[in-house]
Length: 94
Figure 1: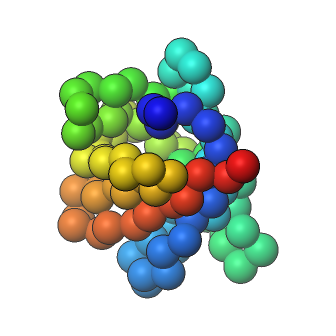
Figure 2: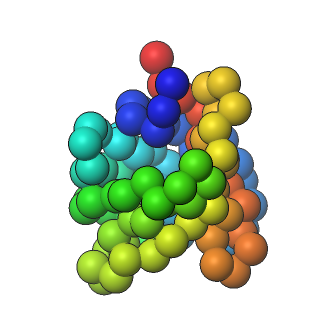
């Protein structure tokens, strides 16, 4: 399975608070995110994404910037690493 689908954040690192609690990636290349009750501003809200390689994805942020993240999928788990080294993980929703 690829990145398309609904995901819920399971990591709780301080650095990942700017990323949405839930996100859905649609085919071919757009996403819609949802912030959690304790979140104010989220870095990803709605926009586009592009799989650059098997380990990199480019996502439009809330400021419309195109930002590249490392990512990996293992079963129902999707992990991202941003340019600051923040690692955060999502679990596929069923």
